[in-house]
Image 1 (tube, one colour):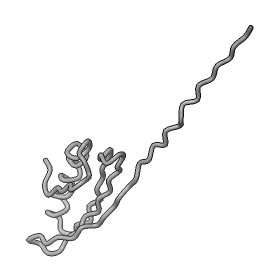
Image 2 (cartoon, rainbow, N blue to C red; image 1 turned 30 degrees about the horizontal axis):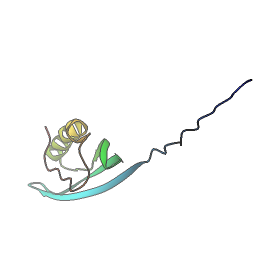
Image 3 (cartoon, one colour; image 1 turned 90 degrees about the vertical axis):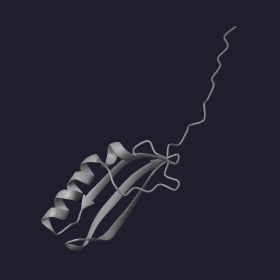
Length: 88
């Protein structure tokens, strides 16, 4: 007698969504902007990037520093009610 048993586990669909937003703000040099993009899985941030859009040299430097520290500051955080104004 040969018995064959198969157990099918349901395939779990992993959904990672991306949200992007360009934010404008006033700096001492005038209006500047930066674009943020976050990847979210199950309500948790799993990745984050930002693209500096500043035109002033000092603002560009500050934005580059912000971008450099962004991912390590936000990955693993819950997206619900998430807000960030400074990193690093």
